[in-house]
Image 1: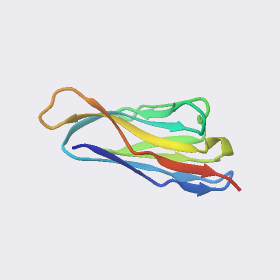
Image 2: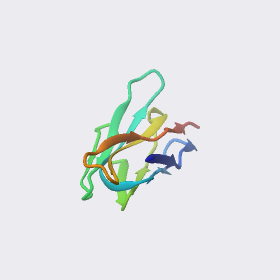
Image 3: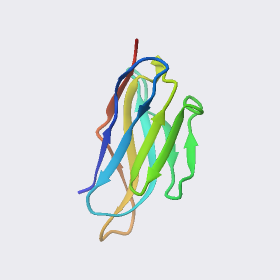
Length: 119
């Protein structure tokens, strides 16, 4: 069974940085698009960044210039700089994964990780 495990969240002061990670595990044949989403209290989940299997990235305007996403084989590492209180949210990793023995990708989600920006 495929799983996505996020880590690296926590409490950080405004202006600080965090480096998150998303590590897929299981019977994985191939990973296509990987994305990070976030959901702030009382708001809808929003897509903040994505990275293709060849490293092409895309960012939401709300994080552009502060959010850098990289990928090392199957693992994905977003770096968030100049954090603001409005960045406080639960961050979710999402990936399109083809399992061994299958043909088509399936969307998988991590359990979510809390990022709190506060002084």
